[in-house]
Image (cartoon, rainbow, N blue to C red; front, side):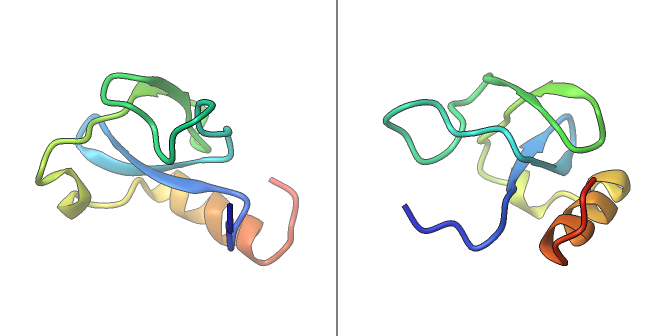
Length: 74
């Protein structure tokens, strides 16, 4: 599976968060309600509701994702 960055975006608790955790085996994404460790150091349940991708981005996740995309260690 092609993955351009070492993280994924996941809507959870009213924000779009990022995680470097692998997807569960056999799926491309995190099933609704899956507990995921986020780059902001929170463990949150994924929310796949229709409007979740329109939520604001978690600022600590955004900073960490930019560092990972630039090749820096987080």
